Image 1 (spheres, helix red, strand yellow):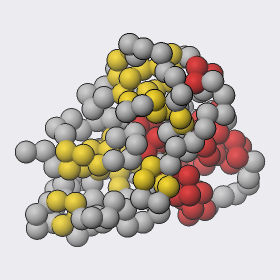
Image 2 (cartoon, helix red, strand yellow):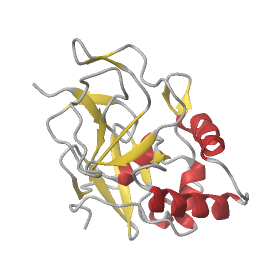
Image 3 (cartoon, rainbow, N blue to C red):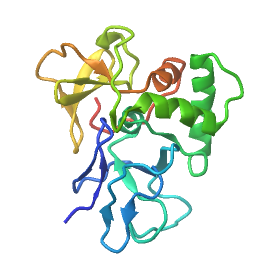
Image 4 (tube, rainbow, N blue to C red):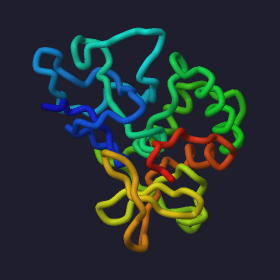
Length: 204
């Protein structure tokens, strides 16, 4: 029985056997005795994205009162949900992201906690995912941006829309009308400034 620890582009945490290529966390949001989520879906504004393997360390998923292991199809999915790269296990990526975030958002020498504050205001509308108006047409968004159209999430890649699923992406079978932006605007500006999200192998 899969644990409830797979994150969708809308930030929901669901049970699914697929693991994806990144892990991460939002703090401690599970009960280790039952390995089930608590009612809250975050306990820290630092929502991070981590590598699944680091220095040979192994963790028992939801096995203790430490951070709750979450899993993402890829970095574009994690960005859409409101996460950023971890400065511990992904220091080089995190520094590249911060540099692009500063350039794209017109700020200097920002700290991780300050990025988290901005991202937290952009990722949530109360307890729900905040959707944003598109700044440009969906096909003009940078590679790695994600949008929501109806009940479906889509990755933008080279002007094309790829429909997201737990197992990967596939070509959209219909036009995306009235889409809204899932990727937080500050993260979108970092992508536009040159940061390249790591995409799942199905994104072709």
